[in-house]
Image (cartoon, rainbow, N blue to C red; front, top):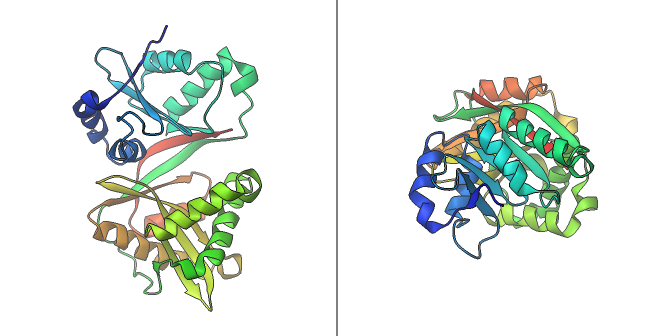
Length: 276
């Protein structure tokens, strides 16, 4: 018997109130709601608990993403998710994401206990104003002409950060994904002699927030002060759209944290990611 409820269009106002409580933390789920996840036929689902008047949410798709989930809600969501895993990651505030994973692992260890990668503490950072750092004027939206070079940078970043090669695990899908970033004007780059030497993407985007991801500098130019002005330019582009720029970064990546702080980002929360 289900303990949570699949939400629909009639729950729109309720969901909006919960997401508006923290637009930065809830950017991903807000982006899925704006894409139509509450409508029948749209990929993914949004679950609510308690069923009658939800105060906690769970996005269920390729990623499980929690919103305002207390212990009772996590118990319910774990029971309803069940034995068979259909997702590749659990993401959310650290206590929620790790708590959900623990509950699933205790119930069905053969399915859930062997996560491929766990990032228990990732700093959620945000910047709502233009960067105090001087922006690099070379940063611009990537074009299809540099797709192959941009793809190489994206793959290199993925290998470094997630310890997996996307061209092995999902080659066609990842190539298409990178193409959609460029075509959708969500990919920024510095290009020198037809080579992408810096890249950053906009991942989840809601009406209020855009999440910067996939930040990468070619290895031969690291340590030369390129990342701060480049990220300042990306940040200004997001803020110039009327959105808050946000991102999350592993707490142990001290050079990246320092870069983002120099660009005007402040820590506003802590997330965790469990990857399968």
